[in-house]
Length: 429
Image 1 (spheres, rainbow, N blue to C red):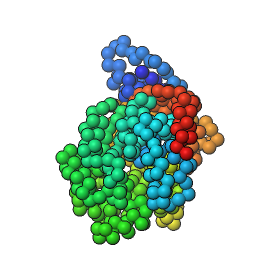
Image 2 (cartoon, rainbow, N blue to C red; image 1 turned 60 degrees about the vertical axis):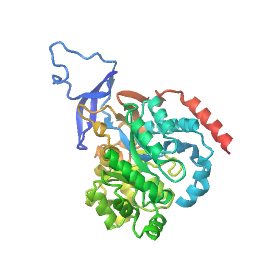
Image 3 (tube, rainbow, N blue to C red; image 1 turned 30 degrees about the horizontal axis):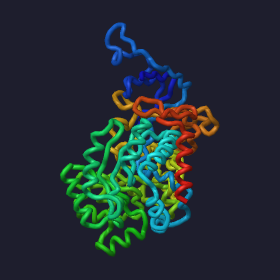
Image 4 (cartoon, rainbow, N blue to C red; image 1 turned 180 degrees about the vertical axis):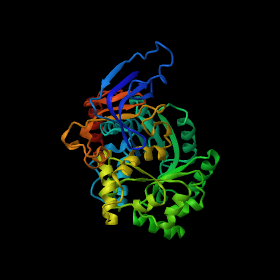
């Protein structure tokens, strides 16, 4: 489709706001400007674009889509079922036993619920790890949603052979899908598997991602096993030779931070999940000062339980200020960058990291004409400190509007999805 947004305010790649028009041709942004100088788009006299829609933005704000840089989408089936426990008990007593009851075709349904929630929060892509990658990927593709899938290799649910097959298959499967090498965590993955994964990383010159240093216990037990932190172990094994990153990264010491900076790795922070599981607060100030790329993820709906990037942004800056006892750290504009461009960098999505000509049209429309966004002293800080899902009017992925004014335009009616989901969880009880 060809869509013209006009009378708009537009958040640029420098986190500044310009006014004018944004044009989408197919799945790509083809013009940003005042609507007068369009010679770069219409190169011959008489050239015109036939618009499928022309949308008066009414001076509201067009933004690059948020990148949910760490999540487990299909775990919506566990929302509010596995609560009020620390991480290890949460995993071993609730998550793993209930996941054993879940079937692949059911994960497809629950992933769709997450996708709908992402769209209502302005999220246009997710960096997903789950035990049913095929079904989660298919749910995203069927809905028109962009996914970067990362393998969750561990001792119990997958193998190196399966991982490599998925890596090859899903990096050439659909334009909305890509696949990264990864593993669940040090404490669920033995050294032989990690050595094999390092070999695959070398074979494909591919980055590697994992849960890293989420709890103090995780780091202490790794030191007991190997005499070093998880990050130091992974570095020694060659897992970071081609980049990648870590999710959570709360219990980092200075050497861990130095390794991430040296290897140009990304840290994906998950503040709501880390609060709910009482895991801790990541040292984001030190990481930022070291030049590490920072991104934000919601984590899964069993540990969060809300897939809301606005809440995550507020917690990122608020908890960093609390941790450092300094209200000036983690400026709101830096956090907004983390939620958009920083997430895209962590996920390898350089073609949709900002709103610019030639980039993929992954964006959302923010309603500024609501009381929580007024008065307009500083729009970007308003987004982080008072913005809400209630302000998201429209979400577009790859040039297609998937959500607008409370309605979803995906492969299935929401009520049908909810009905199937509730029938499944009733069976599982």
